[in-house]
Length: 107
Image 1 (spheres, rainbow, N blue to C red):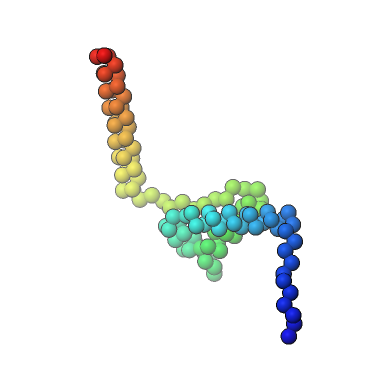
Image 2 (spheres, rainbow, N blue to C red):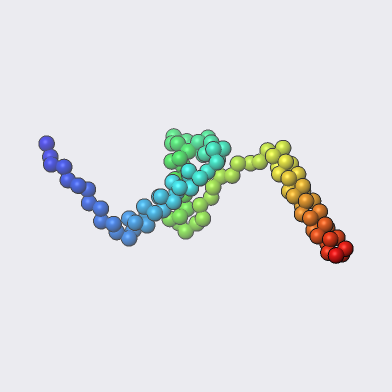
């Protein structure tokens, strides 16, 4: 049996950059919403969604591109809810502005 040798870790500039790029890819994967991960799992062929994501992320960075991340299409009901919430917020802000104007007039 051979004697165990501790692997060499040269910590070259290229190796450190690759490790940082890989760490950022993994961090970005963990930040994805569950539905986004599900999209990658469905799109992956003969690999996991995780592997697909990491491969595409690293390929983009190596080639000087911004990594593209799949977005979950909004359901029509979700987009309508969001629009209603934004409209409600705008109305509340307008009402607050109006009451400030009225109070300054009557001071």
